Amino acid sequence: MTLRGTRLGAIVGTLLAVVATACSGGGPSGPPPVELLHVSYDATRELFEEVNPRFAAQWARDHGGQSVQVRMSHGGSGRQARSVVDGLEADVVSLGLAFDVDALARQRQLLPASWAERLPNASAPWTSTIVFVVRRGNPKGLRDWPDLVRGDVQVITANPKTSGGARWAYLAAYGFATRHGHAGRRGDEAGTEFVRALFQRVPVLDSGARGSSTTFTRNRLGDVLLTWENEARLLLAANPDDGLEIVMPSESILAEPPVSVVDHSVERHQTRQAAEAYARFLWTPEVQEIAARRFFRPRDPEVLARHAADFPVLTLFTLAETFGSWDDVHRTHFADGALFDRLQRQREAE
Amino acid sequence: MAHRTRERPRGPVAWAVLGVSVVTVAALLLLPLVVVFVEAFREGPARWVSAVSSPDTVSALKLTGLVLALVVPFHLVFGVAAAWLLTRYDFPGKGIVLTLVDLPFAVSPVVSGLLFVLLFGARGFFGPWLIDHGIRIVYAVPGIVLATLFVTLPFVTRELVPLLDAQGREEEEAAASLGAGAMHILFRVTLPRIKWGVLYGGVLCAARAAGEFGAVSVVSGQLRGETVTLPLHVEVRYDEYAFVDAFAVATLLAFSGLATLGFKAWLEERARRAMRTTGESG
Image 1: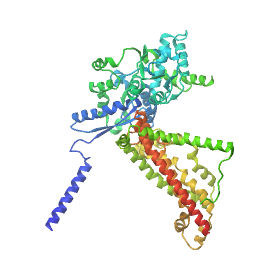
Image 2: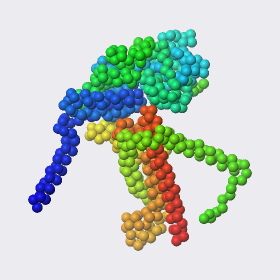
Image 3: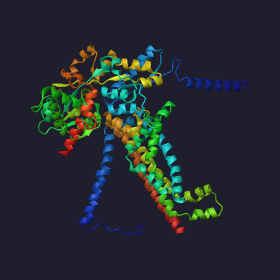
Image 4: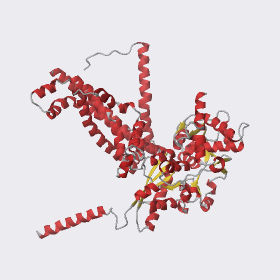
């Protein structure tokens, strides 16, 4: 009887202990865990898979062992922005272009319009640019932008209305033509004529950068792929047997993919402190190094110097100096019925 | 065995028609299936096992399983009730209801998904109120279940309406005149005669629910390990240049498709036999 009593006591005791542990979240008596939702674009999948555990370790060191879990969502930049506007409660967003972050401020005031000023480098922790990927031995001899609209060259790029990378590619092409002239024209006339000729050579417009990479490599369509520098490097690494080559044009655009805390969400989730620490963490030498190894051009001069061989020097012109603001660019080029739509309709009519 | 003798194709026209059909079936149906399996096992069976047992694949499998477990039983009950209502009662607007049941077949799945974003999104009709009360529909599991419910709505009802129509009301009326209650009639008279139809509709509904991409993709939000169903996971891995993984996960869907086909064939055979026995006894 006493034996049974003790056993019963032990069982009840164990059960209580189990329940108590379960209620406290399973861990030893630490602060409650934090969850962050980070909504990002396609090209950063591999990068943040590596960055997130580092941040969690850093945060735990600084906050008495508190665990932080970063949940990820990836997709085309414009589409991701739209999901956040429609209620995907991202604590942090990192998107392909500032215009998509602006949308969060413009359409639902989820963050202040001055979001870009809150972090260094207009909130872009690294930069990238648009390069060419060509087939083994560069059979068509494509060296620079003017070569792309020569003879029977077929160009692969995504739809600039839906893809951040393709938007940068379109702007790089247009910018190059306005700076150097094209077909005897100058300024915007040259730019318009050049992108018209360029997009006439695009047989399929995928909706995202990853889609057009696959069209180029797996479906073997086209002579040259216009894409992010980091996507190009990843593509070569993923298809080692194809003999693909990267061609750096003489000039391209400085692409600045930004990051921001989403004020509306962090206030609701009470995660501002962790979200801001996460965004700032991207500028640490540790993450800059990871970014450089993933072929994003780091902002940190020391890290950049270490990886100088990976990032050939070319003239990079900025969006601001060539086009003005993203709002101007959108109105002139990508809004419904703007230049890109008109060129597409012209092409269908031909 | 054969009650009717079938002729062999005669003449060049018959052979040409046969040839075109065989080539079409092979090119459009068999070839993609073969490609899926070849690509999935390109790096050997061990690689396939590691791909389908990765944590993200397992969570996608669980989510698709959960969706099936909620959607299929719901539609079995709803489909029987709707078909019963539509064939046994006359009411104003019946034609409209019959047409509405088909609506999910008529609209593109992507539009169905957007519809839920427009209803339950943060800028949607009910969205702001729901979000204020801490209820998440879109970009969460409930949205995925709702979108799947919507696109699979017609299967069971569509299967049962013609069956119930063909059977007529005589036996049920006889049961009623002998004093049977409505529940008794449903379970003892009506359901046993349409059970193969119910199962058949359920199988089609399950196949579509497991494979739905468009509508679910719109409401998912693509949260890794949380709102990514099997078909979405195939796309995710493909976009990550993990082609072997993508095709390995696709084989899971292919297996479930093949199982569905097999089960469907078995059901049809059973239903035919059941029909013959009732035909002989009647």
